Amino acid sequence: MKPKRLNRRAIQTGFILLCTFILIIGVKAQVVTDGLVSYYTLDNKDIAGDTVKDIVGGMDGTIINQPKSIKGHLGDALDFGGKPDCVQLPSIFKIGKNPASYEAWFLKRPDSRISWQYLLVNKINFFDHFFRLGFNENSGQLRLYTEQANNVRKAWITDEGYADGKWHHVVATRTGAKGAIYVDGVLVKEEETMAGDIGGGETDWYIAQDGNNNGYLIGAMDEVRIYKKALTPEEIKQNFKSQGLAVQPAGKLSLTWGRIKAAPTYR
Ligand SMILES: [Ca+2]
Image (cartoon, rainbow, N blue to C red; front, side, top):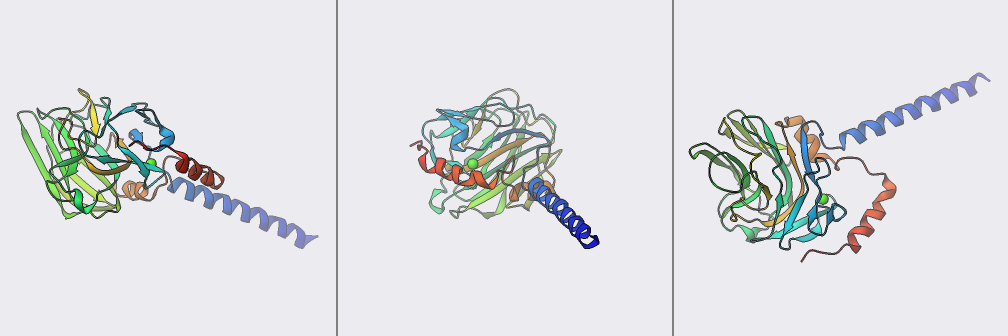
């Protein structure tokens, strides 16, 4: 009788350990939700007509022209062909003097390095206080650009270029007078930014242009997220490895793939 009881206890302990392991893996596979304001998966399931769903904040965007739906880093992504392809967002929130993070996956091809191009902006014109993340002119180097009143600005670029036809993860943070760009989970550049009001809360925001009907992106974007805090290096690593907001049961995988194959394209 005694060995049987031991066996049962061993099975129970094993089961608890397995559940704990699954829970830890599950939590680690999720994106950081603390400070997360808006999240655009750009998956076909989150796009209805021209409306692009914000699955966290309800700040749905609008597709302008005809970016193509392609296979993304996670599910589907949007491939922008330059002017006038973009996504118009509502005024997400006022960043002002507070910390913020812009995050996305992008794929930029070697032949797409034409003029300045932008991933995410919080202003529709070039006058006073804004925060823009994009690419340097004629290169695949990432560019972080902050400006506050009276056209006082700071803009700088990463040392490396990323127009290599592969998916990359980028996070740009601004805290006080410090900005940082992380690529694929690693800090690649830390520089001074404007410390004051860098806008938001006044006009529409944009994905894939500079907000001023220029600087349109030639390239694809996926999993765009906006935070009202500066993500920590650990959180950025977690998001880089994450599989989205929640872990999908394994059984759903075939269903998702079936939907991707059947989904219409946008060009
Ligand atoms: Ca996606």
